[in-house]
Length: 561
Ligand code: GLN
Image (cartoon, rainbow, N blue to C red; front, side):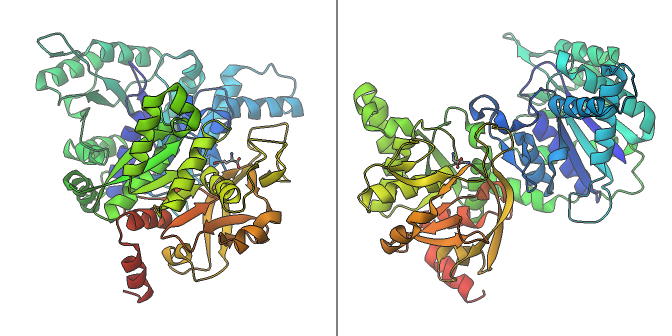
């Protein structure tokens, strides 16, 4: 196994994840099989209990792992299916060491950060690196490891030490360290400053790790003189100093790296030049350029709770992008804070209320994504009602599906107090209920998580057709509540159809409103499996419906063309 370690210096938020996944893309384009590991030095066992407000979206894997959103980037860029073990956290490492200690496996020894924690980290990395993630058998050729945080952080120290030991034990030819850093520009003369990078490289070297390559983030391309200075003071050959300057879209980053021969430097360090082919990035180039040249756009109203931080819905945004590009359209996402749509906002913040409604009415379609807690729920219900009554294409994801059930029960069934038990535990009309197998005491990893099968109940529905008439679909889940099986009969009699159910037929997975051009709710999260060039069927359906192309698309598809 060959390892490429990506560390970060100077500041966080440099786009280390995108750089690391782009390196993976370039190596894959050279004919190598690539896997990846993300290390998050925080104490949380996984990202499942972390707030999207603070940390961005929680990405969900096939195996039910709730992980850092960077794993989503890796899955999308490398087109792989990762496991929960591919996301290492301090919490997971300590948990495994403490379990061993309690079992008595350390035979009376004092259990210490060095060597026990560091050994656990090394063993974890070596065990996970060989798990195949690309559908082929046997281990990948290269494992890209991204170390979260910034070099010098107290909490990343055990990881740095473990990685130093790993680099030594696997040997020179099998380890390549790329340090991502920032080159700021200061003052009126606009000089590119190398000092912060010099300091962070010095810090890394003091910890026993020497970077083979530098990936320098900057607004403008680096000057030759800046590169020379970096090379001299950071002990890195000038040819190994990569510049990741700002680009129109992130798909350019692998191309930028290829243009600077990053693959050559990495392959040389890893002694892989004989095995690799020149990078084949034609499709990737086409994709990046197509995106740049899109002129027409489609307005999508995204009505959610966490709209202040767009990373909270990163996969939804990416899935919209994939679907729009398939329709040669640029996504124009209008973020609407659900609470701004509510009646009380008309009194408290009338301008925000008016603007939110105006935005909603200007949109070609409405999307209500997943979420937790009752904030903004009333606004989401209003958005679903607006979309239903005005024939505006609507996609409700997870919470968004539950919202459409509540709205339908209130407006069409006349059950004014219909609600989810999540928002009103005492509601006399619980149309969404807590799933029996859930835990009421533990929040971490106790939801219905990961890939589950949905069986279509009829071929005569939009979603089944969008999924190419297949009998079932496996999508990823993350929820605690579900549509109350006892109200299904009544809802269906009034026109809301549950066209997808789980294998027991008790759990509702997909709803549609046949009297509406596109009104779809799904209990799962289709955004997690959307890929560039392979958009999620449901997002594609939403965009096609928003632009009046859905019927023609479905007809074409029915005819097999
Ligand atoms: N809060 C809802 C539930 O737990 C929806 C979850 C979600 O949207 N991911 O069922």
